Length: 283
Length: 159
Image 1 (cartoon, one colour):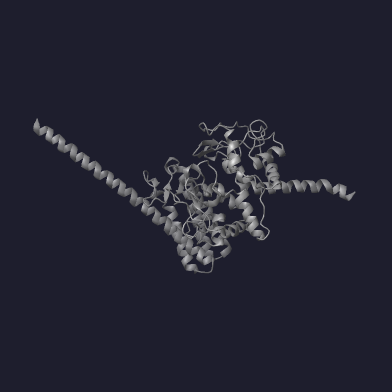
Image 2: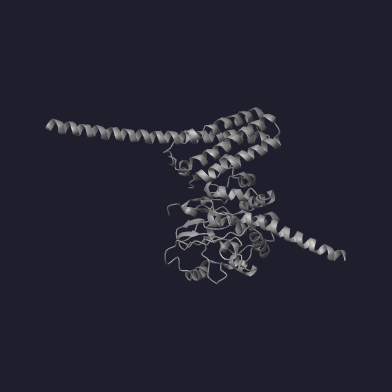
């Protein structure tokens, strides 16, 4: 009898837990940054932010729960398929400007929590803006070939011989926070180069260069301590008492809200990476 | 007739020379302005460094107070370090002062005032000597003062 009476309460708290967990994870993944047109005062998660790439300008879609212009009509399966396989509910492929090649590593439980959080937000009615991408890049079937060549689906696999902090950091960096999407250089087809993972990207978002964050002493952050990294993630301050700006300033808004344990896990993971020399800029 | 032509020629030559001199002067002036503001930013970095050294037990409180005092002064003179026409990449090509500074001048001033207020709060905290309060004020100034402004108005050019 007592157990029956308690059941709805525990379900409620489980739902609340999932929501707060989802909010934490959505922040770690920075969903709001790309899916909000802050520059023009856009509503959170309603999309429309311009993302300039060498292939054209993409406009992020509305991911509020509005059933017609957002993702309100999506099932859990639709949401998981988008993250894990880069496929829309109608079967079309996403362009890899949506970082599904990285999000494929997000665990199902985390993805479900993010969806629950997004669905708890106010629905905003705002139609998606068409991408401004020229042919042939605009031709979605081409993405099928791209995926065959460059996309490896599958969840994050922890390394059992490594520490818990390392594995948590690896999950945050390589899956949720998708650091490699900006910090890794891309080949001619716009795919990240695995052998230069996090080794800096001379042609990052909006054509801006993004620094090497491997421990390479010359071109990376080899001289940084773990504390230097956690400080940067917390307040944006570099060891030289400069403060990062631009796109990384936006990222710091999110990383400043992480737990101390997660920030230090990221530092542990980054410090354990093999140092990789940046590719030559004008090569 | 000949005389007039010659006079015209020499007048336009003089105008050309003057225009050239003026543009060099403006260019040099812009470079001086940029160097000056970079020096001020570095001075602010040193000020923060002095406060952090005290927090880490590596520096004394008097130096932290000097550092915080510097920050209260320098954050207030930021607007005059950004005269119109001094945007674009710095001479050493490391940073870009974004055009939004001047197209969104009032927003820029809001960001600067926020930083100045937070610098004042840091000095108050340092004068109080309580490390927990100092650390909170230090992080607030860094993240929501310096960092917030750099996020909107500055770009680093990575090499």
